[in-house]
Structure formats: structure tokens, C-alpha cells
Image 1 (tube, rainbow, N blue to C red):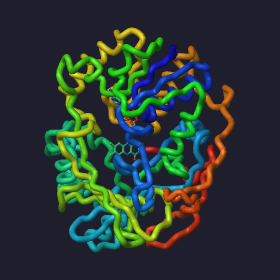
Image 2 (cartoon, helix red, strand yellow):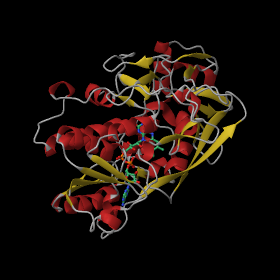
Image 3 (tube, rainbow, N blue to C red):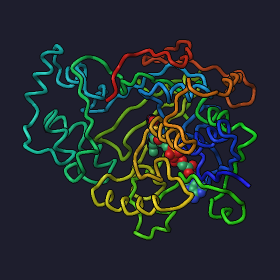
Length: 420
Ligand SMILES: Cc1cc2nc3c(=O)[nH]c(=O)nc-3n(C[C@H](O)[C@H](O)[C@H](O)COP(=O)(O)OP(=O)(O)OC[C@H]3O[C@@H](n4cnc5c(N)ncnc54)[C@H](O)[C@@H]3O)c2cc1C
């Protein structure tokens, strides 16, 4: 008899499996319909031996020391600060918009003080901010809205920003300095050997059994368990009785190119040209050295795997109905992005799972220094995926040159940035 049946081997399911097995000595069965662990954060070596993220680029960043310390039990890190360029008016310029973006775009030489005035002169006064368009136009004006945001949002969401709730672009950071980092969180790093290796370390415990290629419905009546932790789609759990919760999906087109470096930054956004929204070059993220390089194009679409909950009031209402059912369902705990119909970053899902574990074990909260932790996992020699174990990982700088990657130790931070 299993104590828990956990549906889904992504961050939500894996954190709970690990905590319940190692801290509560519970017997756990974790099932996933996919043929791998890691959920959407799954990465793997492609046939050329390049480490790629199957479901699009996943950059780890958090302001939570607890979350960072917790994950550090299962991985070492490499320093990585994410940077993105946008292709606008035939130029590649930093996004979020900063001093360099404005100067490059308009051929100016403004100072930080002057650019603030410049942006203020472009901004349109709005009495009431209701839509995503209002958010952006009131901050940077219509011209920059058209260049950077309007078409990107239309591609991403399939609707004009004037029809989208303000929450979608509630965060439009503009900077008057030259900081070109995409995130400003305290902890920004990538698992040194990838996400899947980290998940393997989390789930390597005799109390945890993993069943892949399996829908929980196939086994829930034949394998005895006491309680369920459900991280799949909440509407699916209740047989879509109130209708389907809408999601936006993506098609990922992966390509390996016969060149060492393809583009000048990890991600290039294409707000206006092409059907895809962005192109990611994985070697920037992983620091891997390889004679070839792998990229992924993202094409937003209506149908397909559920990725982004569509933030419209009617969908929030529909979710409320499912949440009422979920709250009343005995012996089942709903956790993670699909089960709570919310776009969460990885760190938020880890925090949510740790909070549920604290609740299940009658603890007020999780804190790394308050409980016995498993010994830090040994570092396994790096592999290039070709089985010879001698692949090397280095950070690639924005001009294409290389420098050695420095693993980041838990609790140490390389920036003092604030979150957005
Ligand atoms: C394109 C994209 C890019 C992203 N980039 C970032 C990023 O850069 N940084 C960041 O912090 N976050 C990012 N995220 C968010 C990140 O993917 C999520 O926070 C994280 O994956 C959520 O983990 P989860 O366990 O809740 O869900 P998932 O990872 O989706 O795991 C749920 C699992 O449940 C399984 N499942 C579903 N139904 C069943 C069933 N009936 N039976 C058995 N198994 C089932 C699924 O197969 C899946 O593996 C990104 C998301 C997307 C879509």
C-alpha cells in the first residue's frame, strides 16, 4: 500500500515525493503520462549531444533563499544571468527597454536622467488602466508599444492587447540605466548538469517508485494508496464537467546548426516579423561547449499542450467553480500550475509544494535549517550525452567568446537586484 499516489513528475510532484519520502518516511508512487520525469522543465541531450530544453527555455531565478537552498540539495549551479534582445526596426536592442535601447533605436545619446524625461514625454495619460494596452501605453507611449509589445502580445495570446486584462502585462519594466539583465532576482543560476539530472537526484530514494507512460486513471483503481497529490489539469480531474479551462499553447521547433554560435544573445525576441515569437540558443543557458549549436523557435498556438492559462475574468470564474470541487474532494491535494490554473514560475511551484508538505506534516512552514536534510548529493562527472563523460561546460559570453563556468554555492548571491 502506498501512502501517496502523486500524479505528475514535474516540480510540484517531485518536490512532494522527495519531502514525503525523506522527511515522513512515506511510501510514494509517482506517475506521469510522459516518458520522462521533470515535467515541462525536462532537458535532455539531443542526437548531436547538445543539452536542450524540450519544452522551451527554462531559466531559474528566485528571491527565495529557502527555495534556492532546498534545490541546492540536489544540484550544483552555474552562474547565469539571462539577457534578451529584441529585433526592432532592423536592429537588435536590449529588452526590457533600458537606456541603451532608447539611444540605439532613436540614434540618441541621452543620459539616465534625460531618458526618464524622454519616456515621460512619450507616455499617454490614462484615467483608468483596464487592459494590457493601457498598461504599456501609459508607461512608454504608443510608438514603443507598437514596436515592442503590440504584435508580440497578439502572437503570444492570439488577441490584441486592448482585449487582454491588464494583469498580462502588469509588469513592464523600463530602466533608465544600462542594466540589461532580464531578471533582477537575488538568485539566478542554472542547474550545473541540467534539470533532469537534478530531478533524478530528488527522486532517487527507496521509498519512491516512478511509473512513466501512465495516466493515473489507468492505475488508481488497481494500485492501493491512501491519499493523492494531483498536479495535472484540474478541469480534467473533474471530467471537464463545467467545460474546458482555456490555455494558450506553443509549438517548439528545435534545430541543430553546423556553427559554434548562432546569435549574439541567449534569446532574440521577434515582436513584428515571423510567426514565431522568439529564438533561444541553448548553449548560452547551459554553458556547454560544442562545435555545433542548438536553437528552438516558439510558435504560439491555440491548440496543443496546456502552457499558459488565459487570464480573462470569465476563465477565473470558471476556475473558481473547479476550485470549489477541488476543495471538497476528500483525500486529494491539488498543487502546481495545472491543478491551480495559474502561470507559476518554477520557484513558485517549489514554494507551493514545500508549503503543502509543511501542511501535510503539520508544520507551520518549511525551513532548511530546522530539519534534518539528506546529505548533499555527490557531484557526478559531467557528461556530454555521448556516454564518454568528458563533455565540458563553459559559459559563453555575449560576444561568443568563452570563460569557465563557476558553480554558484547555495546561499551565495552574485547580484543584489530586486525582483520585478
Ligand atoms: C514555454 C515555457 C517556458 C517557461 N520558462 C520558465 C522559466 O524560464 N523560468 C521559470 O521559473 N518557469 C518557466 N516556466 C514555468 C515552468 O514550466 C513551471 O513553473 C513548472 O513546469 C511547473 O511545474 P508543475 O509540476 O506544476 O507542472 P508540470 O511541469 O507541467 O508537471 C505536471 C506533470 O503532470 C503530468 N500529468 C498531467 N496529467 C496527468 C495524468 N492524467 N496522469 C499522469 N500524469 C499527468 C504532466 O505530463 C506533467 O509532466 C515556463 C513554462 C513554459 C510553458
